[in-house]
Length: 334
Image (cartoon, rainbow, N blue to C red; front, top):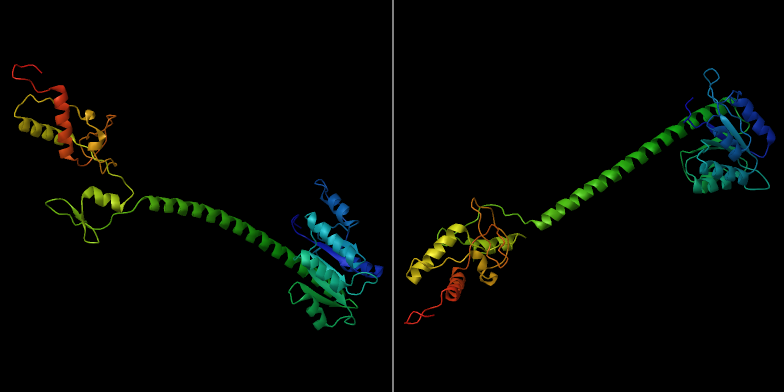
């Protein structure tokens, strides 16, 4: 018999002869039990003297029997066994056990705290009717009735069937608990992934479909039929920021225009880093170009950029030229 198999049975009756009858009826052949783990010692400490049986006599199962003579004593033994992790699988419970708790009250107390024991009421049907017992305890498949005087075969079959039932139910409970733990762990993992995905979705507003753009001014039409600059459209439809700078090609083109306006070829080309950042609308890169563009800022940082306010930039160029090449008087002096 497997070490995990629970064959512990509690006999509850105030009549000593009833306990003797159970020991004679159920296989309790004494065998040498390996107690290297101290399990049997623990059982004895918790339950008191117990018939310890660990082998099968022929094809007949054997059991560990414990005895209680009053209802309250039975309740305390069940509680100690449950707390020690060695619960009873089956309880044979007498009904009348004066002067203490009767069997019906004892069952209610046990099941109020410990739902799992299979219980057999041993009754002569003189104290409570079947309807009265169910009214007190409720309908359940964990309750059986054994009529006095006992039939030997009935006791053996009940002990066999109910211990088997308890062990199958316990296996199911453990398996269910493992599944629930696995589901909870998986649920937490999925929730973390969902939270990460939701965070990413909150940070990114996707641009979908075809964007209607004017071929002349390159403005984009919104769903509300407004026409926006590309940078305005991106800023309003995503969490990205747009940085306005000037690319090297446009910078050369701008300086050529300044030279043309000044009417000479010797106009100095100030480095873009000297331009003040207030001439530029500060946001963040739109998308990468093949050529690296220049970020117009006081710190001289470079970044990929889009367009620029050329008029403001021309004004900055002229101010710098006036400082570096002030106009001369008629005599050639500054």
